[in-house]
Length: 110
Image (cartoon, rainbow, N blue to C red; front, side, top):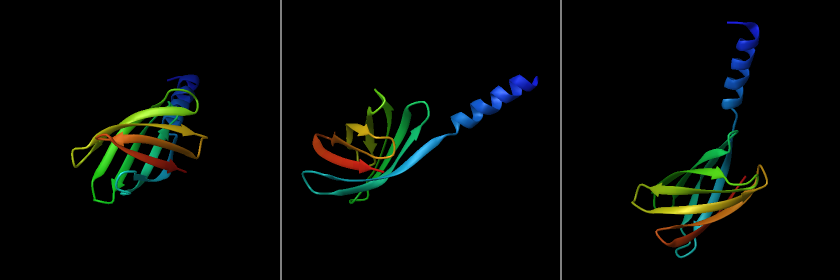
């Protein structure tokens, strides 16, 4: 393997490993049920949202950035609830909203 090929491979591996994980807090609007977790964004514009609700249910999902600041995703919870969400990010902070089985929720991250 040439030195140039080796260097390009090393850069590709380093960039693919770049992620940013931020804390998430929020609540379901109808019940004031709290949610906490993390949002992890990757350099390719995709990421994961991992939330635990006050009831103990865990909701996980994936998101993608639609623009440089806005994104959307879906969640699936261990208690059977599902939903969609959108968010706006400043890079290391942001806010979002969505629904779980029609019940609205809001969250902040960073």
